[in-house]
Amino acid sequence: MPDTPRTVDAIDTPAALVDVDRMHANLRRVAAYCREHGLAWRPHAKTHKTPELAVEQVRAGAVGVTVATPREAEVMSRVVDDLLLAYPPIGRAKLDRLMALPAGVRLTVGLDSAEALRGLAEAARAAGRPVGVLVETDAGMGRVGVQSAEDAVALARAAAEADGVEYRGILFYPGHVRERVEQQGDAIRTLSDRLGQTLEALHAAGVAPSVVSGGSTPTFWRSHEIAGLTEVRPGTSIFNDRTTSEIGACAWGECAYSVLATVVSTAVPGQAVVDAGSKALSREEIRADSTGFGALLDRPEVLVKAVSEEHGLLDLSRTDWRPRIGERVRIVPNHVCVSVNLHERLHGVRGDDVAHVWTIAARGR
Ligand SMILES: Cc1ncc(COP(=O)(O)O)c(C=O)c1O
Image (tube, rainbow, N blue to C red; front, top):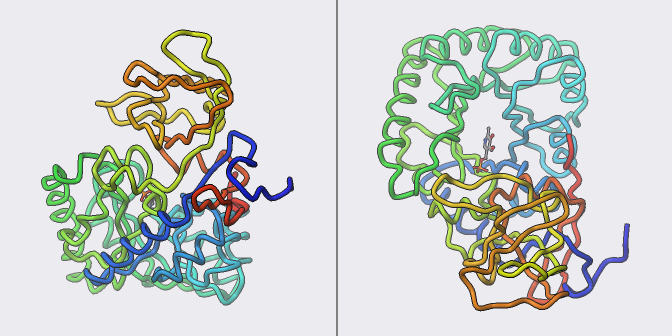
């Protein structure tokens, strides 16, 4: 590992920066909302993939963390003893890795098929390890999740009856709700009604869920409008990003993550080129009514209008600022989780000082 830089000036670019004070403020805001509304907070660790930051989340009030992969589960299990794998574990290799997690870790798994349930129950029985099950229901995203209340009841019953696992409830992810926060009313009502039908059917069938796990960063601040919800799993909200700000789920000044980059060319009029391209920011697109792959933290009117692997092209058409070669900028990417995954380390900064260098231990596949 290279020497630890003490100041931001000493960090080579491109590099991932976290404004530590903003991050803590984000955690405090989310924790306070959950306390106010009686919701358990189980943040998704896929955003930061960094055990030290999972520790900060638990310190701030999280009941445990959510993970998406066995690798994230392994890394987070070193520091957190209550994990939810919100992804169906299919195949021997993944099941073996889950069963090998430290015995003291309380493990819950979300799944949406009888096949996944059977595999998990067999593995749990063979390992002699208690594993909780949440039945995943499709809240409207159309990605995974059982499609009807009847199917939710059938899988919940199967989970309640299966030897080796313990049925704990249901899980959904409202990833399809991407309107601005103040325009989410209809979508949230539809989601809440649909969930209500499922909850009613589960109660009537004698498989009432003790956990109803949902939540996302875009819908986070309206989670209390979803009847029956007991737990929320926001990921992005620890750092926020350009999409979160555009949706109105955070202020621009609450973006805690940025990619530090250096201006390497101003040869073409109207633009400046930085050394952060798709390999540092990612090529994730933004919502339909916006363009670009990121914006400057200190000059949000300056967009990254195009990226190739090592080049980010800053659009100077809406600014009088004319950067010098060698000048450094901080770029807020459209989608923070995928940008973090491209870096090896997070630099936790306070002003111009580097307060922490964290290894992103759960990155990769
Ligand atoms: C199943 C699941 N839960 C929670 C999250 C967290 O979402 P967000 O980053 O919008 O808060 C994700 C993100 O992809 C997810 O896939």
